[in-house]
Image 1 (spheres, helix red, strand yellow):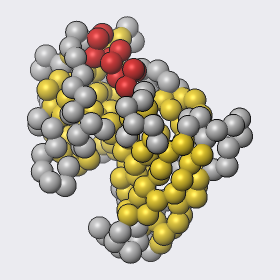
Image 2 (cartoon, one colour):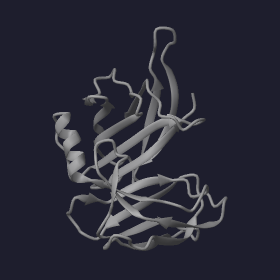
Image 3 (cartoon, rainbow, N blue to C red):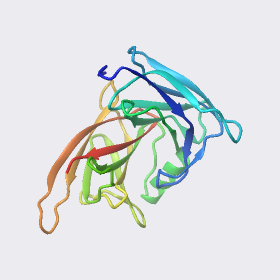
Image 4 (cartoon, helix red, strand yellow):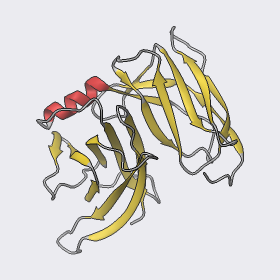
Length: 226
């Protein structure tokens, strides 16, 4: 952990992602626990009580201010549609956060579209690749992750399995399915390549660490410098 920015807070709502774009959502109506790396070196937690039309935001105190703090949301209901979900949060840039929960039913629909099955015991990783300078989603990237059984790229007409030549579309969205954690810390490396065009050759575009946890989902934006 890099204790370069001190202690902060996170406050917001918990949202259940509602479709295969992984950007549409609904307020999560059940209870959950939000957890982040704490400035003291130990995790800090806060409760979300989602019952009602206007629930109180959660307030997470003692948060470590980091460029990437892997914040998790754990639904109180075990085995329900909402999965334990990790998200990459730049806690050194602000205190407002919508904690995200990934739907197992939505994941299953992506796997079905790609004619494969989700392993409930593996990690599932949803990544948005975007420009580090502008935040705009980046098309034309090929990405890989060791120990991912499948890589699925979003397209305007659905999802396609990576055959070694797939690239991101204008959404910059890729899902790695049935991923095993690479080490005890649960981190995996994503390797990004800018695909060749008619005028430029393929080029390395960086490597990025991503948290992978068995039986959980991970969602993150990856800022690529091109």
